[in-house]
Image (cartoon, rainbow, N blue to C red):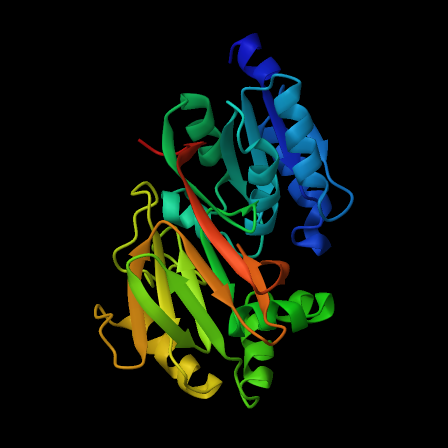
Length: 292
């Protein structure tokens, strides 16, 4: 590997990803990325700061070693710069890595993809100015993220969100108002926004989505209860159809979701606040290393 590659590459590691095995992951990452600069985070939000600093220092490749939350932070740090994003997926959930076709868990192969240098230029949406790469949610899943404790995550991993969702399901859902140019004003109780096809794992939820088409894919669950929503989620995931009476699916470049209630918003599994929220798209705003 050339010296210039090593000098141009920084790896931002979230050692809290799979915290019980953090030491093992760190040594594996160090072994695979030997020669590149490694910077580990010590708190939530630090990956964004480290990525922003690395971009300012002139690093051409900024690699996120962690889960979707780490990737989200790194993306927010390098957004608007010329640096390209690399992925070493080691977190609990790696939906974006799966979307790109990366071999999850195979750090050596993922590092080879970065070394080969092939990039894709993909869209970079944002919610109230906070960038995300894969998906956003307003309502049920954001509430589940909000109420899922660290202890629960440690015990159940990705299933912890389902445990929280089941506890929330008996509550009355919020009233959301969804507005977008060219689409009649909608009312709903849960909204999901996709940049890519996948949601919650290897499930092709947003059937028409492409990560480089300049469009947000929006699924609105109309005024139905949470239990019905959970049933519909299963139906949408395991069906090729998206034409259900209580669902509205459309594509747009801009979107606004508001509510008179305090309804949480999540992007890439990270809470960013409450409604109202405005979504905008930066077309082809991010270069990311991906398989050819």
